Every structure is written in C-alpha cells, then in structure tokens.
Length: 241
Image (cartoon, rainbow, N blue to C red; front, top):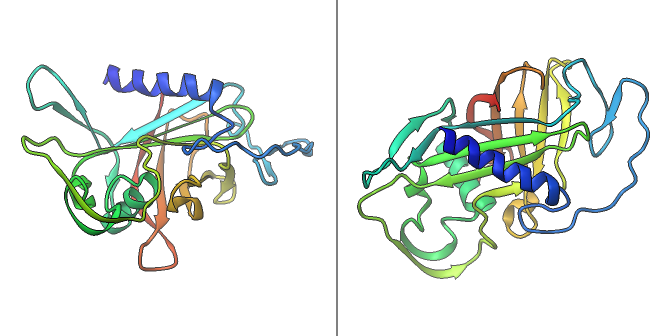
C-alpha cells in the first residue's frame, strides 16, 4: 500500500509542476484569459460556479481508489490488495480501455491474449485525481491485467485506435462543477486528442460530498459502444491522501 500511495504522489508532484498545460497526449492547452467571478464563485474552466464551504480548496487535495492492486512480495505471483471500486458495466469498461487508454482491441482483425480487452476485465483499474485553488482537476487512469503464468499478445489487422496511454493523465480541458443542488460535485475530463477518446467526455460524479471530506462515494461514466449515451461503469469510494 505504501508503494501505491508513493506512486500516486510521485506522479502528481511532477504532473502539477510541469504537466498542467498538457493532456495525456502531450497537446498544449489553449491559453484563455480567466475572468473575474462574483464574490463566492470561482472559474471552473468554462463558467463561474458557486463555491460552498469545503468546495474551494485552499491547498492541493488528492483522492484515489482502485478495484485491486498487485504488489510484488518476492514470490512470482504478487499479493493482491482489494480497493473499494467495483466495475458495474464490463461492456462500457472495455470500451473505455479500448478508446481512452487504447491498450486493447486496437485492430480490426485477429487478436488474442493481452491484445483482447476481455483479458483486462479481471485486472487492476486505478483512478486518482488532484485539484488546487485553481479549480482545474488533474485526473489519472491506470489499468493492469491480472497476473498470469502465461501471458501473450497476438494482434493482426488494421490499427484503428490511435495512441495508447497507460497511465492516461488528463488535465488541460477538465472542469469541476457543483451538482445535486450543490450537495456534491462532478469532474468532467475530456479525453486525449491522440485517440478516439478525444471525442468523449469522462464523467466522475460525487452526489454527496465536498473536497474537505476524508472520503467521498463516486460513480464514473463513459460512452456505451453501441448507444449514444454515457453509462456508469465504475463506482466506489475515493480516499484522500
């Protein structure tokens, strides 16, 4: 667990110093003047939003969760630690792995082993995010397949998925908004322009909770591959670190 937290902290320390102007594909963020909002409101990247007590951090806040985490302990097969996240829709989750991370189902053709998104379903999925008084959230997604004594990658066909990112770190076009009559908040993360997720919005919703809480319950939404709507594919409890 200490290694897990250390990895999150190391990534965000570097990211918030040097990467806030870029998304996971390394594209430069647009430079726009930030307007002055009325008293009690803050600029979220698009509009001025109300800032209730606990919703505007005076310093950086960081949250994380995962469904499971693998730690090498000396044996060939690592120790598995379970988090609070649950994958609620594997169809949408596979589409997220295919489009946003672009790590599987990359080709139109024949594939097997780790080239197939089905092989990632029982693996590790980790989500973390950070935000400071600028109210511009930085979000990271990371996936890892379930360890196996025999793993292979077989992929023949036409690549149609763009650039793969694992972890996928998004920062340049993200927004933070209050929802549920200001009882909770929503983070909208725009996918990277370097693959199909550039046309999608990833929704992280907390129906009840503030940035001052030590933990909050959340849901994550992404586009269903066969329907023109976003569907919840993960739910859990973000812990502050």
